[in-house]
Image (cartoon, rainbow, N blue to C red; front, side):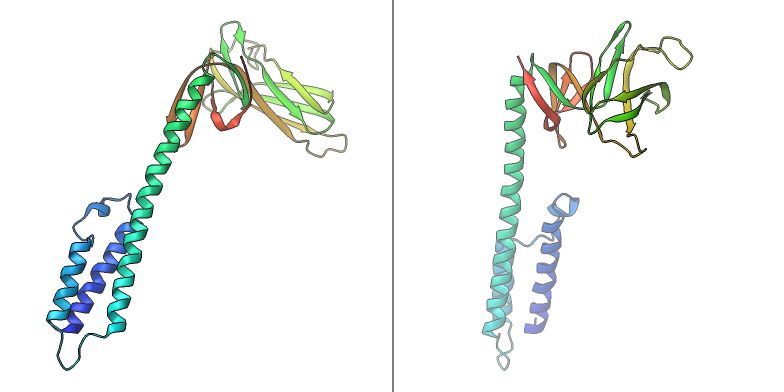
Length: 231
């Protein structure tokens, strides 16, 4: 094996290892093309032993190869530590969230729950005075079930209470519904509207998107969306 061939072989493996590290979540991360420290030393020794005496291995090139592998090894270690840190933080967050169970939370949200005659209210806040406010209630299929309109509401907090009837005046099925509220000012300009859901936390779950709290009426809110907590 000539110096050129050994260098070319080493470079191709180093490139393959870099690609594998960058895509650590794919199957290639565990493939045999990953360059370990033992592989690197074996290749380097083979390169030195098989070098052309008339063209010995350049010191600068050797330093460059050693530096390249060292940086790659450090980046791999950093990626692994960051992954461990992320997992640890997720576990700590989920553990701390247990203290929310049994408490009433208010969180950013736009869902209401209907169970026979019990219908959860939805809080909403207007960023300015509104001459007209439209509330659309949607079922799980994305269809509008009911629409309510209000006039001349002042800036600030309000509560929407659905009567549970659909557009035909019949009782809607029990379940979780989504609500979208829009508002316009006196000049016809849109008014900002934010909605909040409240309820007692009865459970929680944790996944890659974070911690989700389950309320007593079946609705769910993200822990990061919680605005206030009361005992």
